[in-house]
Length: 237
Image 1 (cartoon, helix red, strand yellow):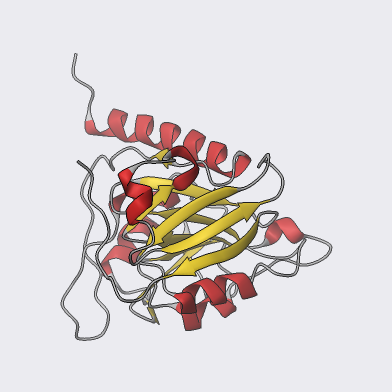
Image 2 (cartoon, rainbow, N blue to C red; image 1 turned 90 degrees about the vertical axis):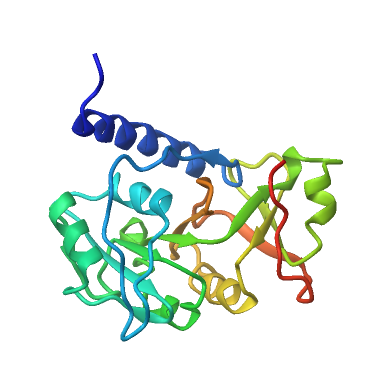
């Protein structure tokens, strides 16, 4: 018997939740999120053309939302208003409330043009560092280089990708990841709100194909290199 849309969504939420936990437990490990089971509205910033959010990142955030927590969404350098169709849809689906960025438990950055907004996220307190925000950042593509040694993908990673070295709990030595669609400005902004451990945000980075890595605030991140000349990223073959 075919599963109903609601049953598929429940399965997706459960699967996604487990993958997110695994991503945080093994920082830098690239997981593949399931495709969001359903449709959702576009978002609109000012008078710009409406855009479609990353369904993988949206589904990931939805798997963590309930009536006990709050959320905020940013795109193209601005916070989406409570009247935005996508914001209202998420609130309706999750029973979560829309909050000011400083108070939001979960934040979705639809692109990396929001570097100036990152500083507003709640980083927790010394008494309750776990009360910090969890952010989802959408990028074009990510590749875990440690799993592709000698691969053509790694050879191309120097062209247009920002390469990060990860270390800390859950990582035996180091992990190398390459990200397309992450600017140095956004990288610096994220580092700024993660530099005061035990304070800092937990971060999930999700690409257009559902690739996801988790970076808890215990993970140390350093930038390896960034080549500006090439804007394209490698495609799967």
